[in-house]
Amino acid sequence: MTNPVTQKKSLKLLFIAPKGKKDSKTNQKPLFHMAIGVLVSLTPKEHHIEIADEHFEDSINYDGDYDLVGITSRTIDATRAYEIADKFREKGKKVILGGLHVSFNAEEAMAHADCIVCGEAENLWATVLEDVSLGCLKPTYNAKDFPPVTKIVPLDYERIAQASKREKVDGSKSIPIYVTRGCPYECSFCVTPNFTGKLYRSQKPEDLKRQIETAKKVFFKAKSKSSKPWFMLCDENLGVSKKRLWETLDLLKGCNINYSVFFSMNFLEDKETIKKLVESGCNMVLVGFESIKQSTLEAYNKGHINSAEKFSQVIEECRQAGLNVQGNFLVNPDLDSFKDMDDLVRFVGKNNIFMPIFQIITPYPGTKMYWEYKEKGLITDYDWEKYNAINLVIHSEHYDPIAFQHKFMTSYYKTYSWINIANRVKHNPYKLLNLITSLAFKRNLKEQLNTFEVNHNIRTTRSIK
Ligand code: B12
Ligand code: SF4
Image (tube, rainbow, N blue to C red; front, side):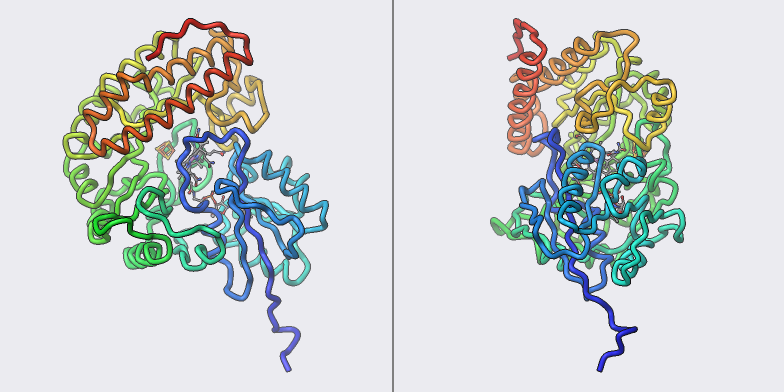
């Protein structure tokens, strides 16, 4: 007979990645949410897991006999996360909320959950599960009360594939993975410095290789002999140590994959790094240029990472080497004028930037910027669904908010004019990818702009071709 004291209760767990109603259609969709991937990989094998990811239209079974429903949250998904949580709780299910948004809005989240988790789950998840088994789940668990997370937990791709309903994909859909976690910089608009930032960690090379091999096996289906899987490296800042970066790139070179990665501008100033990126299968670096004005970069505390004067040269060097540079730009009514937006559109066109993304500065909870705006009473909207970086949620000294947002939207749309698309396709590597993504962005931006103009009664004689 089994001793009832040592017998472990097998729990039935449901993990949910909610999708905010205003999440952009053009946001890339990695095969699973990394937070869910980590939670699955941390959960002892005796527990049964299901995953529902709303980014893939998975339905949610509110009548399932789950012992615990775990929901992740980013700010744009928070309202939806609460909606789902409330519905499960009405049915008497235990709900635990975690993730970036909840971590910085604990009080708000408590109203929707039996338990909330602040911070990274790695070192507290075993305790949470044990407490659920014993029927003594606490209302909060904070990573600060547990040892610091100094190691990266390798992802258990087999178990994630089993628990999720994702089919195998060809190289046109991305499989998420990360090599490092954290970033030592302190840009004022970014959550990382107050979340994972201080503790920079790397995967062990042998763990990384094993994960890539397993991920290929369970998630990749080759379309042709030459097709390769596409991985999305979800690192916040892969390049921090050049020595380790180069070692990683050498390892990736042996894995026969394609991948995209977020990459700091300053590390691309090194030609050998660009070469190694290309040789290792990198087809796209996502660069947060943020602004082409050095004074704006300084105001974000990013001036020491990005040198605006070097942007064009670095982009050209990447292009020559066969690397697409995707550019992210922020516009800010306190720092940028309408003329600056016009200059930015010209810069993007002239440099044929691949898949440019414009965002209105958004003070996400957890950032230095958020506390500053909040303290000064300058946040005008706390509807989290609007925190998708195309709405102005702060007070503007200089501009009428509707006029500013309209100027932002028309400027963004202009970067996808036919002439810009044609030049982008002509001058960049991966021509088909450039064309397909540009057309998708153009359609989406046009739709958003039209809706905005109708909603705000704006008559326009637009002449963007
Ligand atoms: C990769 C990435 C992307 C990718 C992939 C996103 C995806 N769907 O997975 C792409 C490029 C598509 C993307 C898009 C966007 N992103 Co992004 N992205 C990142 C990045 C660099 C890494 C995210 C990641 O994989 N983290 C790894 C996981 C494991 O970390 P985690 O989610 O925090 O989970 C841990 C804990 O929070 C906790 N936890 C999380 N959930 C739960 C749940 C439970 C129950 C428990 C117990 C614990 C727990 O445990 C986990 C393990 O430690 C982060 C930077 C960062 N610091 O996270 C920005 C970041 C998440 N992105 C951000 C933003 C703003 C966006 C966009 C809104 C941008 C835009 N305007 O479109 C979109 C939103 C898309 C979406 N629906 O998520 C912000 C979010 C800020 C916020 N407060 O929400 C971040 C933090 C960057 C920043 N500016 O500071 N992004
Ligand atoms: S924006 Fe990039 S470089 Fe700056 S703190 Fe965040 S992750 Fe680091």
